[in-house]
Structures are given as structure tokens and as C-alpha cells.
Image (cartoon, rainbow, N blue to C red):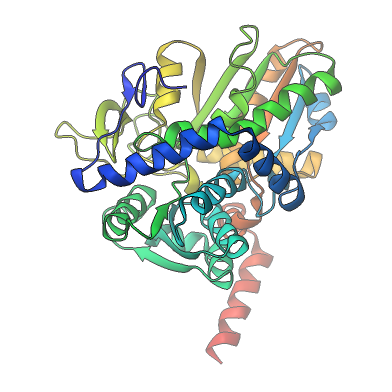
Length: 410
């Protein structure tokens, strides 16, 4: 919960143009009414159980535990959600909220495409018109997700301005919203942006942590010593962390996109390097990768969903208070961790999720066998096949692509 209207410590807020004030007041009222209505959460849980396979299980990674020789490793399987990631938790909740508000159109931004697919799925299920904004670069590297968004009936708009990635897609979505406020809801995909989005997205994602806390005690017989999650904007991390925030003995570890490493200028690290500074952009105050004039810098990650220029104000506050520790994983480490997880456990984490595996693999060997770590596998890696196959330099994949290209040309 925010300490005041949209603030978490010194981060957050509601920095919006006057034209959007009435729309945000409407959204805040609808959200607060929904939170106070037990039937709303009951409807949400029922929808997620019948439509999105909740509760998702926890899997014991026995082979990795044996290989690393330290703490027992468990994995929360958000990849088993409908559409393949934790994103469904947020968008289905917001979809029910849209029904309450009586609006007929939803818009969204997406980087890795998972939020876009989830939003398009929600729109198809609940009967809304849908437009998805996606950076041109992300459209190119996440083509399978673009295909499914369009098949689900969404209009996908490639954004060609700026860095052509997630932050630019968010800017375009806000421009659309200003023009179509009466009929449209912006289903923001992560726990960033102006109030009430950080709180609202975290609230819907808290279903992960609620389940995980009960499950890990049943399976492992105790609470975990450490919980790992990747951090782009921060929704999956806040989802699983929420179940353990009050447990002082559970260390919470967020893993950012280290890209080409510290000092390279090609990463998306806001909290674990020294390249970010506090500023206000896109409706809220947090740590941003920006220059001295407050202009947002370009970011990089092998994982399209982690190359956002800012971070959730809730995580910024938890970092400042020392409750969440932040680390970074480089592109090379991520590919290695993905390959190891696939080969040893038969699990295929998304490139985003693989960042959390990197840090867990680094730290598990120094822990004792009676200790427990929990990794949030926030999504599955099907969407990353082009990026991963290229990183593996797979000759059979290259031959397949060349053959397909020749067939299309013919």
C-alpha cells in the first residue's frame, strides 16, 4: 500500500497532464471500490482458476540442486499461466475492472510481447476492442507474439520513435489514451506509471506470492531463505515478493538486465549499478537511466521485457529501505543459465526469467543443503526461440530459416 496518495517513500506519485485528471479520478474510484468488495476478488480468483490454470505449482529442481551442491532449489511456475507468463494475472484483473467502468476498448504497451498477448486474450475473452503498442525493434525480435496478438483480433502498432522499445511504446499508449479517454482503458502492464497503476498491478500480481508462501511451506516444510525474481518494471517480482515481505528471515533478490555489463552503456540496470538517477517521467518518480538533462537513455537487454528505462516506485522504495537486494545478470550469463536449466531440468524459462536463475545459480553453492531458495519463473521461453537460436548459433535453425525464406520468395 502507498504511504500517501501514490507515494512509496519518496517514489511514485501522480504526475499527469490536467486533461487526464478526471480519467484517473474515475480509475482510482473504481479500483478502490473493487478492493473493498470481497466479491470482486472472488470473481477474479474464479476466473483465474478456470481460465488461467491457477494456482500454478512449485517444482523442485532436483538436478540443479545436485549439480550446484548447495541450497535446495524450487521454481514457482508462472510459465504455466494461460498465454505463458505472469502477465495474465494483471490483465484479467484489469479486464474485470474495465467491465465495472463500462468501457469498451483497451490499449496496452508491450516489450517482450507477453503482456500484449495477454491483453489481446483478455479483450477476446471479455469482448473489448484492443490496440497494442510495441517498439519496432521488439516487433522484429518477438514476431511469434505479434502473430498471436493479431490472430486474437488486436491491432498491433509498431512504434518507430526514440529507441523503438518499451519506453516508447508506453509514450504512444498514453497519447492514445488522452485522445480516447471516454471509451478506453489503458491496461498498463507493469507496476510503474502514475498512481494507481503501481498499486493496482501489484495487487493483482500478489496472487503469485499468496500461493507461493503456502505452497513452499507444504513442499519444503519451511519458508525459503531467498526468493529470486527478474526485474524490468517489477510486476512479477512484486507479485512473488508480496507473499514474504513481512518475513524478515526471507531475503528478497531482484535481478536486473546487465546486458553487456557495468560500464558498457548497454544495459538496463537502474538499482544495482551506478548509472541511474532519480527523476520524473511517464507520470511517476523513480530511478531512471537518464542524462544530466533528464533525457531518457537507450537501454539494452537480450530480454525484450527487461529493457525498460525505469523501475517500479515500490521496488525503488524497498531497495532504499534495504528490504530487497538488487543484482544484475549479463546477456552471456543469461544464455548460459537458460541452456543449463533446459538441459538439466527440462524447464524452458523466458529470457527475462533466466536472469533470476543466473543469480540463484551464483549463490546456491555457498548455501547449506538445509536452506531453500525459490525462483520465480515468470514466463516460458517459446517466444524467445529466434533470439535464443541465434545466441546458440544453431546451424540447423539457420538452415531452417534460410529454407523458409527461399520458400516465401518462391
